[in-house]
Amino acid sequence: MTNTVPALAIQGVTKTYFDGTETLSILRGIDLTVNAGEMLAIIGASGSGKSTLLHIMGLLDQPTTGSIKVDGQEASSLSENQRSRLRNEKLGFVYQFHHLLPEFSALDNVAMPLIMRRVSYAEARAKAEVVLGKVGLAQRVLHRPGELSGGERQRVALARALVANPVLVLADEPTGNLDTETAENMFTLLKEVNCEFNTAFIIVTHDPKLAALADRQLVMEKGQLR
Ligand SMILES: Nc1ncnc2c1ncn2[C@@H]1O[C@H](COP(=O)(O)OP(=O)(O)OP(=O)(O)O)[C@@H](O)[C@H]1O
Image (cartoon, rainbow, N blue to C red; front, side, top):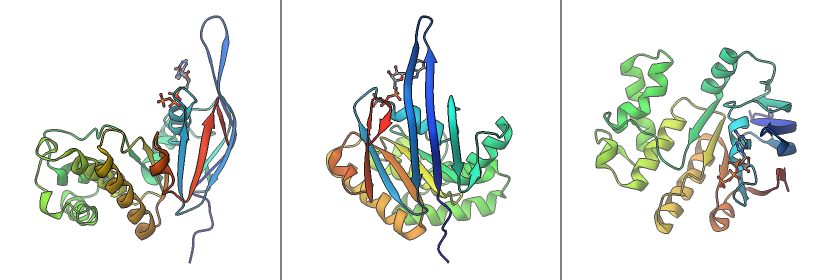
């Protein structure tokens, strides 16, 4: 059965900061629904508010006003602990820089989110191995991040984001640090994963060519999505 609950639904989201003398309106009323399994790209000029929105959608920051539902669950009224739990259960993250732990193998890096959720070490590693195979790194599971190429490191980071079966992966410039060909391969992989696992993706990118590969593109302009 297809999941009809949107992966993410936000309404009337604003974010303002007071810089000591004036109030800065960074997000000016964002309404956005991302369906289960949908792949959305967000592009926009530097400083337009993309990262601010991504942090709010990732439940890492609170909006000034507005509602955020993740997989049907309203997040804005939750306590800090409840929000963390919702984030851990439903969301995955990929960043421009991989943020992998250098001392650990690819396998242990990918297993980490499960271990932190008290899954047994054996089960976490078995699951991590399957997901690393899906991103084409079956032959690299015991390599540490320093022994992998930039593209391979981003694939490990993707595997880590996927290992706990999130409904939505938020990716902030996931190809920003890669050369053109590796970036295209990474984006193709994101699409394959999106189709195979039915995981929704929201991808912030500066690259309109990559954005065009997503199901839908929106532009952030001065704190509004168009
Ligand atoms: N904590 C904060 N206090 C005050 N202003 C902030 C704060 N965080 C972000 N801003 C401002 O909000 C605006 C939007 O920043 P944001 O990082 O969301 O932009 P962006 O679109 O992601 O830019 P880039 O593409 O360069 O990463 C910027 O003008 C920034 O200076």
